[in-house]
Image (cartoon, rainbow, N blue to C red; front, side, top):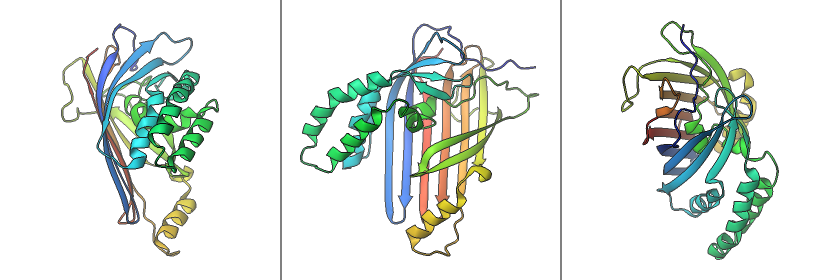
Amino acid sequence: MSKPLLLAQNHSAPLRYQLRTTTAIQVGERKFENELLYVVEQQLHPAQGLGYLLEINVQHTMQKADDLMSRVVADVNQASRRLLVQTDLHGNLLRVENQEQVLAEWELLRQPLLKKYEAQPEVKPFFEAFGQQLAIPGSLEPNLRYKGVLGALLPGLYGYAYGPQEPAVLTSRRITGFFNTLDLPLLLTSQQGLPAAGAPTGPANLHVTTTGALDDAAFAHEDFRRMIRDLVDDFKFPVDLEIDCTGAHTFDAASGALLHAQQVLRAEVAGIYHNSTIHDVVVQQPA
């Protein structure tokens, strides 16, 4: 019987990751693509209770998109470059422990950014709304859970046993606001598998593959159909939503450190709507 995969505090230095995130969105005739490159450090701290206390530091960021809102969002995200997060036993985000610090960082950034974008008056309401939302305790978690850097580094795979004789691990997740105002609920199946291309191999490594499918019972089908039909201005338009959700993660079996990951999430109604995110994670400093 295999031992559960656990994240152990057996290395004093932070793990440094290179993360590439590729996004593509199509809504009707409008299309948007971006590629973001991050250098991120992750440090495990002693937890007060169950789960893990992790410090996530974004050291460097670059992106290809240079439209106004992409630049604004990149500047706003500087406030949350350092996050102290509490997870459950599986590594799923529970709380952002330093939201007050993030708010203080935003207050330092606010005036310089208002000055920077003073020629674009449409940006000021965005900054005001961001600051108001950030001042609400607990408002960060829905926007970070299963998304962006945290989505790439916290796949929620700890606390389970993976092995040739172990049953597949069945879990669920809900990605808040994936379809603007609508959530994306998923059913996930994870098990020991083959390494992804480029992943380190060897007897000390554990490879976990994940496939996901739409949780039909939890999905707002009628609201989604209405959204797509409003988009094409055809109340009888056949809405066929396709979901492609896969993950391949390689861990150091002894320490639980994530060494390599490839994640794909795509939602599409052919020719009308497309929303995809691909994460590629490579550790730069092994456990």
